Length: 432
Image (cartoon, rainbow, N blue to C red; front, side):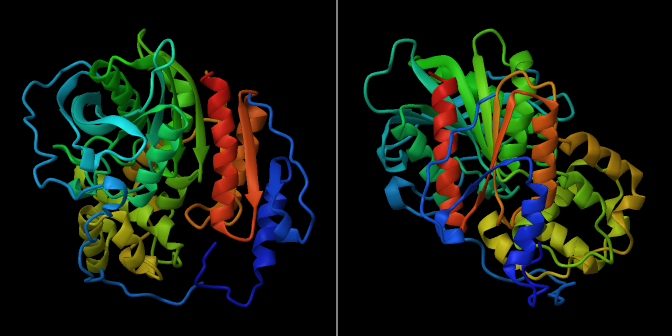
């Protein structure tokens, strides 16, 4: 899993281990990967590395977001809101403004940037922000079905909020689902672009942020259906899976949750973070960034967990850097980082931290209330693929509502296209 080490081993050796873990899963193999002629694949039933620098990089902050397709740089005050009035009902709209045409992606008849109330990991009311896009054309009977786009890690600083600084991936996802005839809602997750400390590490809080964004969107636009589904990637994939179990009990009577699709699933992520320490080798940059975001968020939100006692001076600097950096730049900065140099002793010795990580990041494998599709490419460097494949096996064995597909291709872009095709079909079935 470490792209910087074991350079002498052929890629096939790594893939062989992943394939062994995937034995019980449906695997989509690109013909070019094996030198075969293309054949049809049946649809699934829904149901020790070189040391790196040990101090943060000094690269400049990320450039302004791409203005392609009308996305404009953020307003400096976009995340500034009045925090008075705690205890508001989850999903209640706090503030709303219509987006200008310059900030509305193609395929949208209208767009809204809004702030709403949600519930945090502490059980208290927190403000979150998000964006709603409604497709062009005439709404079907019952209104536009809703897809909640649960994005992956974008950073925990206010300036990283995707609603005001969308990445190219976020913009493409909005366009893609709008073009398929869905209204699209996406939350920034509480504390990112709004007052308060991001609770990046807590899956249930993130899941509630998504549900409450959908609730709020139906008060903003009267052309939306009750029916909705969630599509998530990375951090958002974990939240989407959590929603397949949790949403029906927390969404309220005005929504009808139909199911979840998840890709690039960070299985056993809490355990990976809890086992970091001085002997830890370098990690793939995306995984390292996620780990540092998680620890930085906990360090800022949980004063009772003495994380600093486990950090070197370099580690403390990296935690501060993580709190201020968006993923686009941060993933580059941590590439090759000797992550063991950040710790004075193993994090596993901090029982409060390990207990929190276990509770906050554990993915369910059974008792899902709605169908869930899990997809995973075997060449994904943002997760530990064998752990994800084991999770997919466990979830499929644990609940008949789970379907899973994995993809072996020559490049990640091809895998993503295959995954998107499967997710598109899945969402069409559950929202028809």
